[in-house]
Length: 132
Length: 120
Image 1 (cartoon, rainbow over the protein chains, first blue to last red):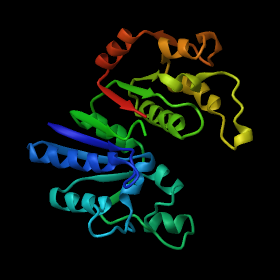
Image 2 (cartoon, chains in turn green, brown; image 1 turned 90 degrees about the horizontal axis):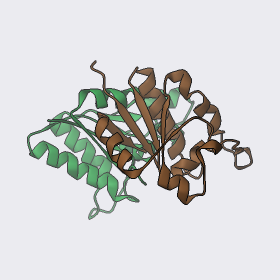
Image 3 (cartoon, chains in turn blue, brown; image 1 turned 45 degrees about the vertical axis):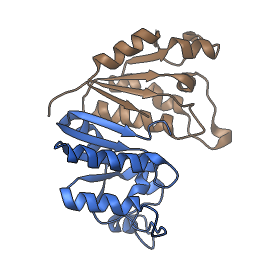
Image 4 (cartoon, rainbow over the protein chains, first blue to last red; image 1 turned 60 degrees about the vertical axis):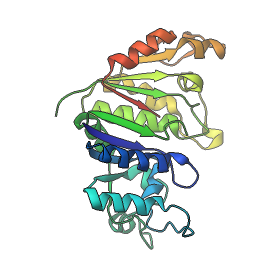
């Protein structure tokens, strides 16, 4: 079965981001596929290249990157939600004349159309942090 | 691209968080992709449709303006939870747009009859 995962929860403050990551691993371990992970609302913070945690705490953005590298996941961050919250790639940093960018490698900025497309292409769409 | 029906469930008050605006953005995007969309307002979400909002003093954009454009995007099926209206002493006549007030069993039916359910 083909899944897409929608993440509204930011790491650290909400368990939802960690739960989404665990769900993604469980989906893959059960032999299913993941069409896309779409980060919306505060979920865009999952794409931070600058998350810095004590060594005994989970670095969720780094774990998404590792999982994506291993399984070729499509990690899409909502561009409108991201730029509002100061999550920029190099191109957007240039567009908005900002001094630096902070979107981690492995994540891509794109529009809400990618969420609709994920819903159309996937057998199941599961949202994490939808009530936070 | 095959078509699917979308149910978007919104349960938060219009201001105080971006949830209402974010749900509308998803609904409008579905409509731009020519997918049929139903909006369901539950809990404090029923307050989103109250007519005559004036959020300017708190520096927010008026949601009513975006809501008024929903029919232009062919988003015409707006459902509100009857129990949530009752709990807040509201009538459908106080709302900006025509809505279906639905009972709990009908909400289960709505969820069952749509291909995709998104909660925001």
